Amino acid sequence: MKRKKALITGASHGIGKAIAIALAQNGYDVGVNYCNNRTGAEDTCRLAREAGAQALAFRADVGDYQALRGLFDAYFDAFGSIDLMVNNAGVSEFHPLLEVTEEQWERITRTDWKAAYFGTQFAARRMVEQGTAGVIINIASNHVDGCFPEANIYAPSKAAVDTFCRNAAMELAPHKIRVLALAPGYTNVWEPDNPINQVKERIPLQRFATPEEVANILVFLASDACSYMTGTRITVDGGALLPVVPENTFNGGALLPLKIHETGVSE
Image (cartoon, rainbow, N blue to C red; front, top):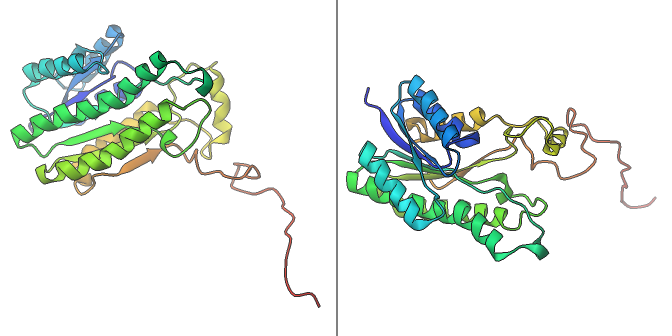
């Protein structure tokens, strides 16, 4: 069976690394993009090759337009074609609104939003030239729907990615190219002593996702089993945004006793 070709940005660690490995295990040769972590990218490639894939690492700061274009040139020189594009690279930084600098805004926005936009464009152009009914999956976040402290740059950038997916899906549908957004919530990429671990008990499923769980869903979305899905977002956050009242105890869904005030016609 002929292997498909995929390019994954930000694939040296975390979710991106898990995505590259899962794709390798499911019939894809993979281009592994990284910015600074060459060792991590080479390890991703090693694990992908062990799964039977061709895997090559490509260094590029995808928030830089010229570097991103160079990444695609190098990828196409090596692989020749593309069936799946995964715009995963992102900068997760959180700053108080009143203290945000232009440099911080630029760093987060160009990687989380600009890179996804032009990564989609570059991939789609080649898919159209090839006549490939390809798939483009952009990694968003459950920040699209929820408000988290000091996420005033990160969340709007991910919301832009989410909306862009729908617009891109409309324009690319005539070319049989599907565009989807995958929005993870809390994913276990932190050290055990990281304070973020205190949040677990507030999630209905009371745990974080593993990168592999997110990756497996992406593989499913890219597959022919989802061939009629485009222009939509799939959120994978263990129900983190479901609770809306503090009375919910998160242990079986029971509510603390509430005093009910009835109204009606007095006798």
